Length: 160
Image 1 (cartoon, one colour):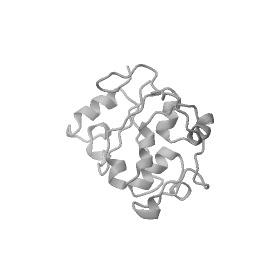
Image 2 (tube, rainbow, N blue to C red):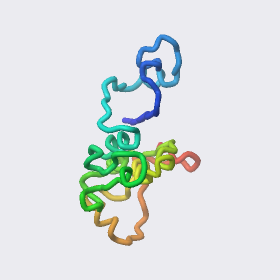
Image 3 (cartoon, one colour):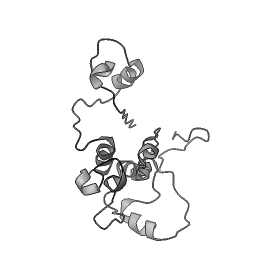
Image 4 (cartoon, rainbow, N blue to C red):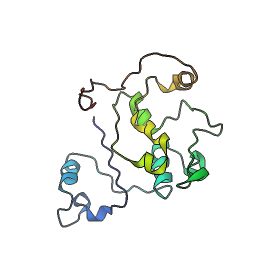
């Protein structure tokens, strides 16, 4: 199974072809949707976009994960109340990596919002969640796994 998560800021779904717009405004998105599961009822738990995306990928509301705004202390992500790694609660991309998926992102989101923790969603971890906290605290020089079920190509890095 392949997972392609498309997240577009400030795009009205009702103006795209997969969601019923009468003009073919997004034909490539329509072709993808024709072969995919398309969600038509997603509700934002937090807003604006940084708290919303953090809640989506962390599985926690902003009041719990610490991200309730765009800048300064209101934008500081915390993994748990003690601000340390929590092995049983990885970010969405990390969770997928633990399952053997190769994750990647095409986005300037993290840089634009100084939300560098967001890069963890596209970095496949080298160890399962149960050993994650231990791995982070040690200075092991073990080679990192790509997290890919296949082999990433040399030119694109995409799993085959």
